Length: 109
Image (cartoon, rainbow, N blue to C red):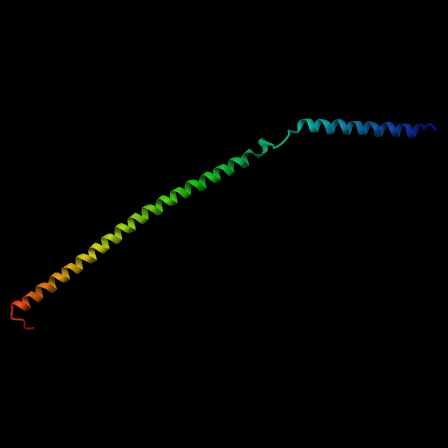
């Protein structure tokens, strides 16, 4: 059973369209790189690396500031403690002088 003219022409057009489609698909597959497209994702990776470096750097700076402030607070507390001890010592000295005067004056108040 043979094909008439229209059927033959339709068959050739369909085969031609399939061949064109197949050639285009092969060309696109050949041009497309395998694996990750580093050119397209490089800005994202660079941004991620810079973000992580910034986080690490700021963490180190924050830790350093905390340590410095802790040292300053300890110095202030020590200075305040020394000042309080000095005030107590001066009060004790005054009380001792007053008591010794009382004892030297005959023990009367």
